[in-house]
Length: 70
Image (cartoon, rainbow, N blue to C red; front, side, top):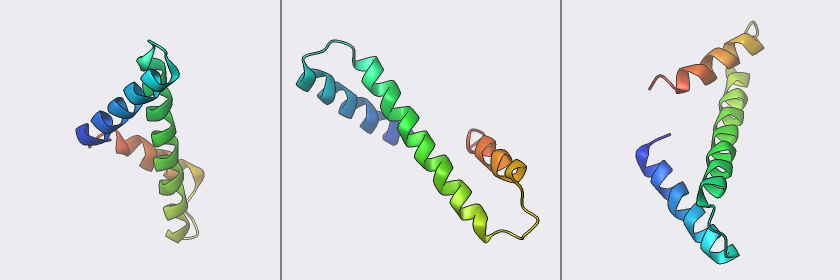
């Protein structure tokens, strides 16, 4: 996840907190980040369908972990 994406999620979380009258922006932020990461991982696994037939769940997990090494 890029800094720009993180900033966008942070501002979105702040907006949602203010809109809801809450002072706990970090919880909204955590939910948005987790949701964005789940979606990114799901898309990565969907892309793995185009891999050779011998690709496994292990290969998908390895690709997901590699996302954090950018």
